[in-house]
Length: 482
Length: 42
Image (tube, rainbow over all chains, first blue to last red; front, side):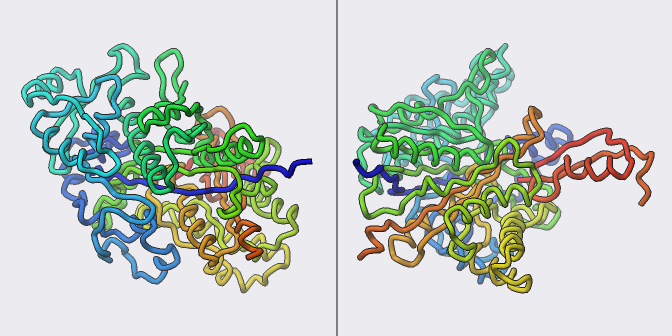
């Protein structure tokens, strides 16, 4: 009997777009500005420069330049710690808003995003010099007066830069269709563009040809579709088209913040079943979450720190005896009957699979949970999400008698990590550590890591249930033999 | 706090205590739960 095919993870890459000009279109800022228009100026005055976003340590951790554990030793607030403001890092780049707008236009197959002609000329030239976007033709721009007239007639949503300068606009797909409103199309287009940049980075860095990708699984939280099929989806194929993956099929796997972990398990299963050789899991940004905690930031005199859009791409392939294995037998699942208390969720996602594999809590070197940057959430009273999760995992270890109650802080420090991901929903959920984990496992510095993600199904009002899924990634046994 | 006969709004949090858990406690203490919601703050 032939040995079962084991899935490995060959690469994980990330992308950030610094988009302070879009912060006003985040759900929370947009609602508050509608109530109190003067707030728009207060927000604009606290938007960060591109250089500040480049030098922000959590962004550099997200892109692989700094180890997550190193962040623990940096004094808070982190926005006062200025690292070298580089654009490209080991796991991806931070793109400035001008180029990102031009790239969104490149991704806009419906012709609904207009950019001012002079702005597009300059931004387009910069984009064409980008090593991953050489062939791009962003198309023609429009005179400023034309854009101004469309926005003035309230037919289009203005597109502005950090300094407030209007450089373009976005049209609705159909004026009578709420599902194709301009703000929703902007969200979806930004999601497509960020995921596409992450995928381009992944393919370039791993040396895998776009034509070799068999299947794409998009795991984002956007809702693409018109009035008759709101959320109909399959942004996966649109992302594949934008990256030249001509031989790939694709579909979306949805599950709120747990979507990426679900998609990775599906990807691994498709590899193990012999259906495909190369499956890529992608996820684009959540534009709605820009500036989500801006009130706390303004109150404490912080800059508006939720000013980046994020995306990721992860390549799952057949075992090559080299790359870390995605262990399908380690899947931890929140089932319909599991219950939604935190203890029940973590017992199902962490304790149960460990017991099944006869592993102890301490056998997992690192746990990656919700990795939201606490500097973004604490000023508004939303707490330190990763720390709460790590304490719960440690408490379960103590309950099982594997550590003493007094060992909980040490366990958290050793097996956890500080949060560093932007509050971009599913993007912040466990997968940000995958790039670091692969690097460390390949270097022999890490044996195994567990990726734990939770999904807030109750937000959609169709159930009171939560969701969650976990798995272990560990060193390839062939490497262990060496 | 005496909850018997009181009306309760149970607002839970994804990473803390869920609305359904708060509602269960309130009901067991004799309160009437008029609204039960869980939110996610990230």
